[in-house]
Image (cartoon, rainbow, N blue to C red; front, side):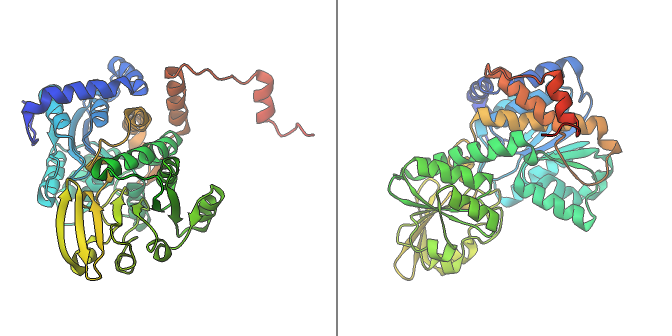
Length: 422
């Protein structure tokens, strides 16, 4: 059996069935896999992936393996692993996996090291932890960088980190910002995060959103999705923002916009999707109602200042799975969901497979692009080539039975010319 560190291999049968179920809703990735099997564009390439270990990720791993890659996978978040999926990848599909739901910090980094131990030539990240570990001073990752052709990155948070590395001149190889593809962030972030975040909150709490005030911190694509879904369930939504253009867009979309200090006084449920740190902090905790619910759907568990909340709490206890009560000196109780980690993966199953189909098609085709052209690229962050974005959109439309028009020769000539006037 391949090298691994998973919770329980006996869960493999159940995991395989759930992977097959997800695959039914991933026709784009299935079409990519069919071509990969024939062309073998990743043959012999060692690919190290740090992603949420879910059924949808499993379909991506099988696609990469079908293309000839030698794949190794670890989790990109301690609470996002589906243990049955991890078991199935190891026992049923012979893919090395190092991930356990609820793993501690030391285990998390040991698993990163296990993937790096395969000496990957292509990295695939969701949050840039694998790349960061490769670049960290005093780690053996620095000795492995020479092997790396390039990488891909799935998330807004990870792309922010990578662009900071590029700006500082420390990025050691080219990386494709998969997150920036239209077929990724317009769908995954808005529709996927929107639905799965609400799903996670409801599974953890079983609260009624109708009639409640939901505060959404951040109005990027993820925030738009969460705000829209909450509104659709009858909630009154308040958006908090630091960017004037996004705040204006939220107002024009019909949402109330206010500073967090003001929203903290009236909110019933708070959801952070900003990608920044300490978006909800001490001065906000102290203004909140008794019974306020706090959830995070940003990649890292830094958006809610949990360390300060723990300091000011008089007591804390677990009320139910993924719900922890913090009792403050003023008698108010605040409830943090999923340890402040990604609530859609901590308490639910993450994005629907139909959404991840496009995101992971970007990952697969991004890896293929990097293998073919990465050695000629500069050491910086690149957008997804427009031809890949369009091909994924084309495949998705075809799978849905949707036909579109083609430009006539006259139309194509008109769009390419400057000579046609009024």
